[in-house]
Length: 418
Image 1: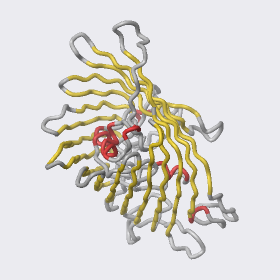
Image 2: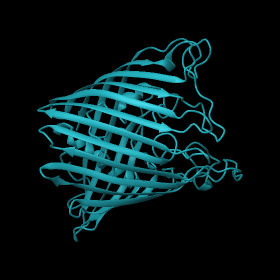
Image 3: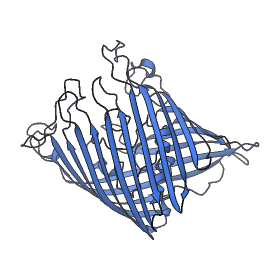
Image 4: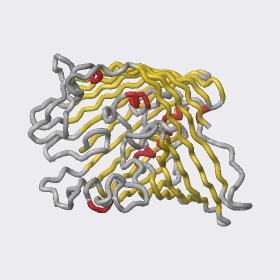
């Protein structure tokens, strides 16, 4: 999961600016395992939002991949989102802590139905002690969990939910997408003088209990048809220097590209192995209520950082994001800027995506807040398919065929976190 889930380790840098009422802690429920057994706690959130969209890909007339003769899309929509977190916590007689975490999400799992089906986002077990924590199951990788990103507020930023009002697959500016929720093993160390580190391994990018993939009864997870052997590592610092709160991280990932087609035939030309890296810094307390941050991604990948392998001969990708928030009482305001550049191969100009946004969040009751943001995304030289050595065919938007997509999303909503 790459959206903002308050209370998870992956968004630790956002806690610099988020209202305190959004911490995802729940009072322990009575144990369902009997006296002395593990306890079970519930948490989660409910989110309702309204969006006003202006998108050059929504215009009438067969541009930006739309069918010829198509009519313009509507400019407004509502959106629902929710997750339920189930925490199982136990402690052995020797002090070892153990348990499991289940995150059930409302998910649009199929083209039919209500669009409000429920499946698991993260689902993993853990053991931890003075030596650190070991997680095993469907969970983000260490690089994603420990990355430090610029501060933000609800509904704002390069990995916020405003882009859910757009057709899927638009943004290349995003947080580190290291193997997402693939089933894996993760280790995270205890903190030493402000420093901690972690690493993770996933055999492939699939999850769940099936041997075949979730989209086919004939293609198996072990068929090497996708990315395999993903390794991630991260080192992080959290502390105070001269009265200023400091968080910094350096992380990276490597993974092998697909080796064969779905039919089992070896690929005549393989894509390059994925290599992606991230550095982040966030500062809090330069002045009361102010938090600022910056992060930088780079490496051999296409799409969001760490997502897709590159063809041979295609240059790597870069991304930079800046952010700041100011909090006074129950009100937090913020702004972010992001820029990502990816090669289109050959002699084509690079794809350049730029994001600018501003927003606010106001906590008006414990665990409940109103949020609003205005988000602008400019996408130039968008390829219609994976770039090759010979170059990419570019998507056109509008009658002037300028290969540039312009998007704005005004968002307002309310979230209940519990």
